[in-house]
Length: 454
Image (cartoon, rainbow, N blue to C red; front, side):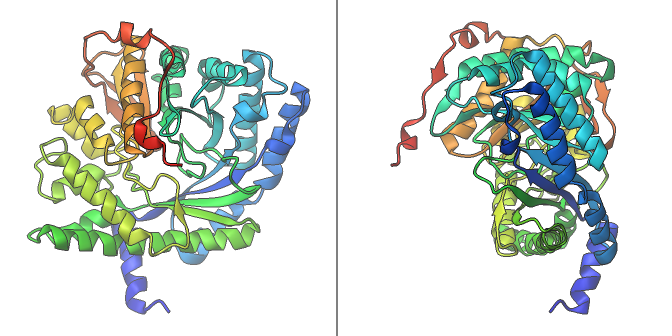
């Protein structure tokens, strides 16, 4: 039984500390829409999504009303489109047609984002995967709600450097094609190492082939709640600090489990996982950077920041894992720049650099996230930044990812504005030294020796 005191405590977290369920994400298997006819593929994808997801918004709203729990986003993830379209899509235009159909379906059912315009060229690149990657600039230009992801590396297979090189070029072209809106297409495009099949968060969500036909995954968020709890432990030692984070994460995750359970019952769709990632927003008091400062660092980016993020990440997992029947997804602190007002402040002050964010990636899942860089950054430099992130994930047997935004026409120190959850971002400095010859080698960086565990 939940006591009256716990109810009051949860209400306080929601009303004053920005606690919310960040997303209910409905995963939909599209493998049964595969056809050798592009018209049938496009119509099948649209029909399947609108049929399966027709009640998602209604059910989410019912749960919000019944339990007074804010559910910020209701979203959809689908089977990676490079798999679904391989038999029918023969050119870039076919992939753009499919992206437009996905966008239309997302708007029809009322979700704000649909993820899964994705490819998985982890070891080698199929023709379908290459076509999808080359279609990204145009697909993201022609759609509003579609999110794309590409998994470029894994601990078992190494890093597909040919695909890394191509994605540097595609990110650059996406920035150009969406230049009229601050290169926003790049904010809906993420590259991964070791991408999970059950991630509910955008832009990287897709419905993995290891999943059942349809599934409900939930992402919770509570940086403000963690920060408030740490305010009560300002003079405590690290053991006490860890205990406070674990106890608070348990309460946050229990809320997510409740919502996931209710959504599963009401929709008649199996519950998958609760993702324990702490996802910040541009709102004051909902920041990972504020948590770092509350731990005793003057500013995020100061020496000790990586240790602080490691402590936070580990203890959120330790506390949360006991509050859910199944934990999955990314389950690691997000440190996006544009979506966290504290991170933005740190960049403006000169406390936080791309190099420091890269170091922080070693202890969280998404390190170079929503990073605006100068528009004239070369495609090889973008690919090299991606390669560094992939290497951290591959060697450390963990998920890593990057969302880089080479903002067209912008230079270091300028600011770009996206609005909503995507926030705004100062354009960060990138090394001026060339990576061209390294990236142009091509081929694959093999898996590390510790990947051979069979």
